[in-house]
Amino acid sequence: MRIVIHEKNEPYKIKIKDIQGIEKLVEQSKIMEYELHICACGLSQNKPFCDGSHRITRDENPDNIYAYNENKERVNVGKFYSSKDKI
Ligand code: FES
Image (cartoon, rainbow, N blue to C red; front, side, top):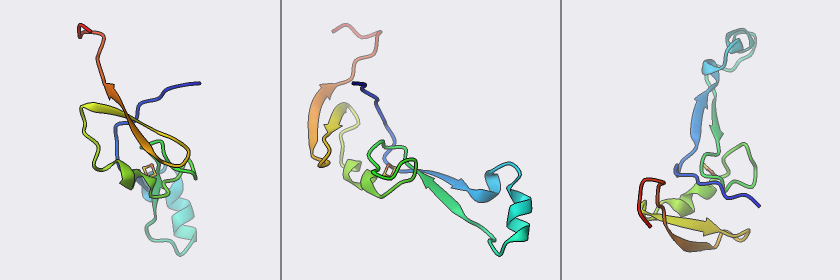
């Protein structure tokens, strides 16, 4: 088991023109601009792509840590302490 903390509640948005070498492919196709949405919240069921699941994180308190189960039910698991904090 591994615990990974994600702080973003929206996807990384990558314009296809930002990908090295894509200019030639774009020139050869009819695509003028395309944007990839990569999951940054950790909840997508279609990783690496965003599936909109991040919307359920928008009302989180940034001072708390939450866990989500496979049904996307949220549990507040406490506060985050850095190694500099005294617990
Ligand atoms: S950023 Fe994770 S589902 Fe959208």
